[in-house]
Length: 193
Image (cartoon, rainbow, N blue to C red; front, side):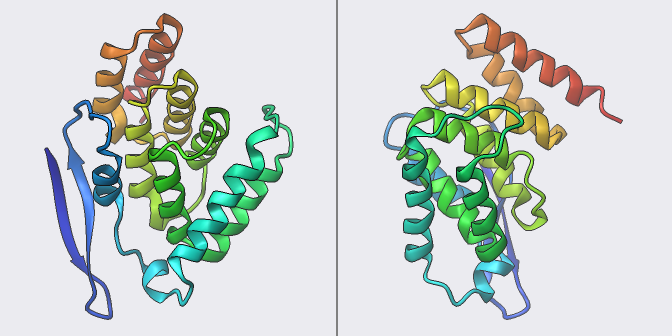
């Protein structure tokens, strides 16, 4: 069950934001429904004169260009540099494009995992709720690498609202090491002051 909140911006445009959700498993083909729930009209999207389809194609090209990139912790990444520029330039529209790409698995798992790790650490307040929901949804992905990337993103985000989703994900996780990592993140979040 999803709890939605309608809100008006300064121009009178109504948007919808997910404010709460009970975890459940999704069947194949539900990613568009999930993306619709995750989407909202942010200030940057409302004020932008950019074409969202063009931005989507640009972000998708970044994901596809990164398919052969090797990601190493602490090393520079052309892919992440591109994502940073896109978020800086397009704001939440770029995050929404990433959500659509990630939830529909339109890139290789190691690229999606790297994007999820990065999304948890992004300093972009306007997209916090969207990024949180995206990371929570990615915990249900079939790929263990994508679930791991989502977990690392949630750990970096440090938002206690993710605890219920992490508990659910840990209960159904089939890989013992990843389940242990999920429980460790839950413990850190519970013990945050």
